[in-house]
Image (cartoon, rainbow, N blue to C red):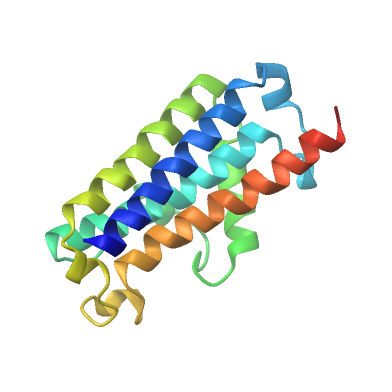
Length: 167
């Protein structure tokens, strides 16, 4: 249980760091289009939530020992979202950009905590097994959790640096 606890503790810490970061900002700062492609912090949170939903589908598939049941909106993507992340990100931006901040934040929070809860339900040996789930193409479910951590960390570092430069 040592590796599993380490991964889940890191994810929980990541969640807390994001909540602290967001708590220091007002809605205007969160919704202002200050980044590449005129994205706002809200758009970045939406982006993280979208990919988080894919991770949640994968973790549910591990728990129920079945193929992932990805969100319905993902089935509408005109291509292979796994092969073209830039196109997928642009499409998902267009799909979810106009949501209110409160909904975006709540969806992301619920999803993040759900991902941690799902990880808790998976026995460590299954979590670390890269061969057990062929649809993960040799990756372990732990990799899915760690990738979510790294994705969030990458964006948090960029946003924190940007905020520091623009004080």
